[in-house]
Length: 66
Image (cartoon, rainbow, N blue to C red; front, top):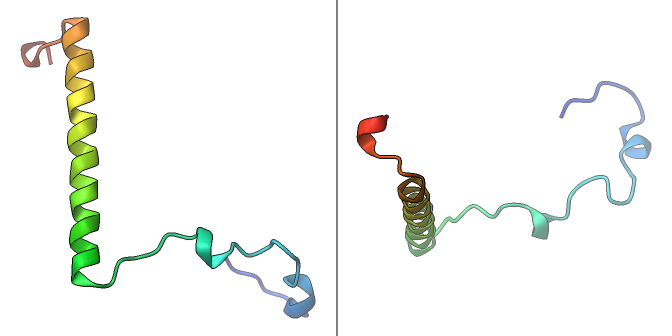
């Protein structure tokens, strides 16, 4: 976000204007945290793929149709 102007302290000193740091995404920095995050992402992708494949099977869609 860019702001060009004067008196930014008064302009941006509003309660609730900036998000709380607790609500922001926390980037993993330690190797074990990075591995855990990668494992979580891979697990979510595998679950999503399984759901989509099951839904396609219910609808009768095969790889040959694509």
